[in-house]
Image: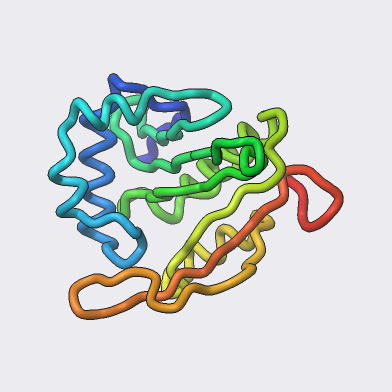
Length: 180
């Protein structure tokens, strides 16, 4: 059965669906995220609602919904504050529910993310971190122009194992690097 995917900025009213999908992501793919299921599960819904309040030039979360209802994917945007750093932003929390993978939902989320980032005055680059074992995610980011610029060994720990993180960057505007 085919469904229509809608991508939009989430807000406080989406807190319960966002938290459900976020907890699913952290439980299903604990090595793909720096946050832990235990920490996120302890976060009150009221705090999630506050975090989801969009601030167009500074922070927002895109959600992908199936048939305009069920949240099946998400990606977050957070711009650095301060005069010396506000030219940079972070792509975080990218996730698509397993039953919706392979349908282009992740690509559509990142493309919409990039279109919105490109429209923000003064933003020069977007960075992200990805566990190098997350091959599909790394391929997606690379195919959209993100370039690896470093690796942090033992960046986080799940259980008794340590995992590296690759740093990737995409130039939104400027005279060096890849532009979107």
